[in-house]
Length: 266
Image 1 (cartoon, one colour):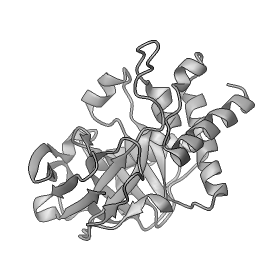
Image 2 (spheres, rainbow, N blue to C red; image 1 turned 90 degrees about the horizontal axis):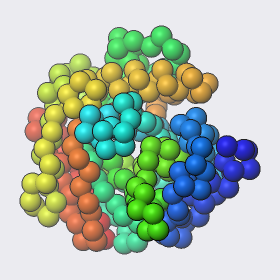
Image 3 (cartoon, rainbow, N blue to C red; image 1 turned 30 degrees about the vertical axis):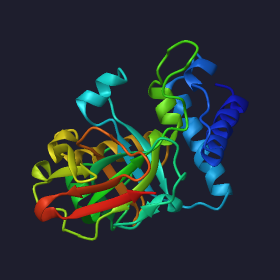
């Protein structure tokens, strides 16, 4: 993509979020779009958000499960950026109309005490750099149409990456644990909507080990001269399918001994 195309695509996504009206599929507007192009659009989108006063607070990892990768016909995860306006407190109510088509996933969040950078990051490096882990919910949204009405084409990986990996919000639970206090592969959650169980899953659904997701992110970021900074929050990836959240939805995730987290949609 040309530089002006990247800027135009990022602006279209920004305006979609601001107005609540989705933009068309970027994969249709730019047929030759690559994953590198998509990350360039994402970077331009975050720069646009920064110009509007928003600050980066962390990163999210998406498409870590085999099922979600198969749906988008890829074999690797993707990543996006968390900004301060995305953070909601445990038990908060999301204002009506804040998001276009919100969905929720249950995840394990890592809060970093030190930076991570470089192509040779190991699992031990991640453990050493982690301050604590906590239960979390990720709120997804889509500023891009899920399906093009004219062609029936569904959004693809370049659409999702450009759209900040569909990230829209984060809710951190109050419980904080040392990263080695639990075997994170066996940390699971029961997610309910309006009191009814919608999804269950285990941390092993995230690349067989949520810690390995952080390793993957640090290595991917090294390719783009980026790094994870001390104090940042990292959403390690969902181990459940996304749950639709129409207005009035009450979402709660019970992680057992690991904790709990909830949010309501106005």
